[in-house]
Length: 248
Image (cartoon, rainbow, N blue to C red; front, top):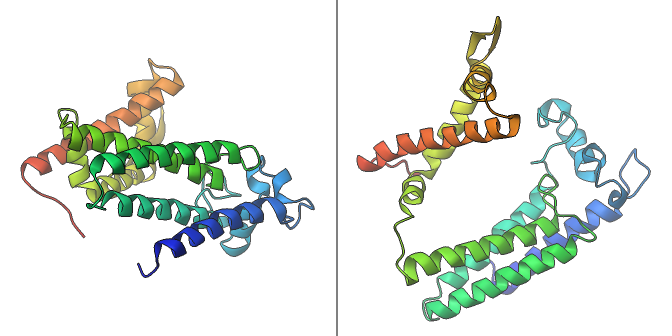
């Protein structure tokens, strides 16, 4: 909030280069090798060691138990993702610059960022769980291009027939996010039901009975996820029509 554009560029460079150096050049305690040789082992990276040391095993991601995809060290490059968003917002709101010029520049910047990410991938692989610096640049570039395309379609060409579902979700994003998280907790761990002769979570019963019984695992998982999205779309549609919006 209180920094200049030049300072923000420096902050971004320090975060991404600093994280790269930490994860690849620093020897990981107990492994006797530098991080660059351990990136293929999630529980052996420097970030995993730091999370276990500071947070402790009971506080790590339950899906892995030994490392966390949203840990302490990986928060640094995630801040870099936010800074890229700040750059984008500052540029798009420069009303003194013609919209066509703003969008052209955003397309170019996005393409360059994707190229940088792909080249960085050679030495620091694109990896979401580690939120690597190459991942920041590549996904930031993709987001810039996607955003520029949406602005061009909606605001320049006025092609808006496809936007209604996104508007409905966008008017109540907090409710959708928190509500889906609460629902997941309820059906995954809190509510147990009898199914096929045993007591299982409500999520397992729904998944096995409605989807896995006739679909392959990958397609069953996708169908379940789509149904959750549609479920919340239905709720948000009712709230949208009644002009009920949760704001903070």
